Image 1 (tube, helix red, strand yellow):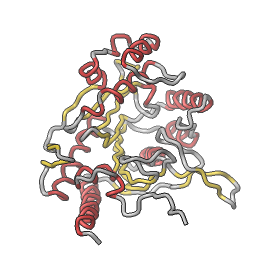
Image 2: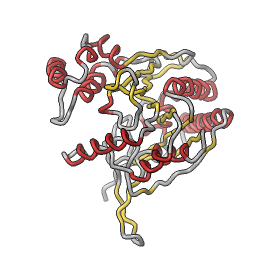
Image 3: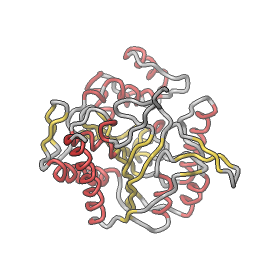
Image 4: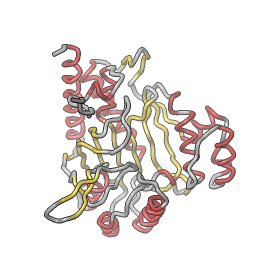
Length: 331
């Protein structure tokens, strides 16, 4: 009923239409993958569980579209994307709703550097369509979406803001725990060197990143689906894009080695056995697909709702969802 609210959702429609137009123009095809699955995979998240009466099995609402989309790459569809609803049984705040919309895209014969270029283009074209400019203001802060976005390795970012150089003691969990204590980080008993490195970034760097910044080269422990760096196997070819102190996109050079992928899944199952409900499950169908052979592939996922928040100057995800999840009103 309020004109300014209506305008937000008109812009949301323009943003989604623009994403489709850009990807279609680059030779991608839009596909649909299952919402119900016997495996909750493709992300680190706690799933919703339901029951299929006819088959008499428990099923999960998808927490990502990743594993099915990569199986399509194996099948010969070399550029695919899906704009779809995702469900995660987790906390709610201004950045999180239990159901939300993502764009996931995969392209054969590219890597995470190629995905950086694709991501920049999608965001800039969306801003021009919705706002008429690539110079925006979000919650009183001016942000430039003009090319190029900054690019900074995770280790360099941590070193810049904390003085700790994790690569100087790579793989040394005990030394990492000492640095974590100095930084005041809370750790899990299962946390290894890479988990601690990622936590140091989350706690000390993320809220400093206002202008668009690609943070790249993540530790392998927090990236179970990502290809290792050939010259530095403790790290993987992954980036996350941060804008206005918030993660907006996540991308990989996709892991296509079935032996390495199985070992990563086994480690994730060990974490589940130790009580981590967000760890990945083993997806045998996906592993079988990798054994047939997946070409070198780059993939990217981005939260549509967070992009709409950014481009409509909306402080809460509830402001950009027509029907956000809400607790029923008491009688």
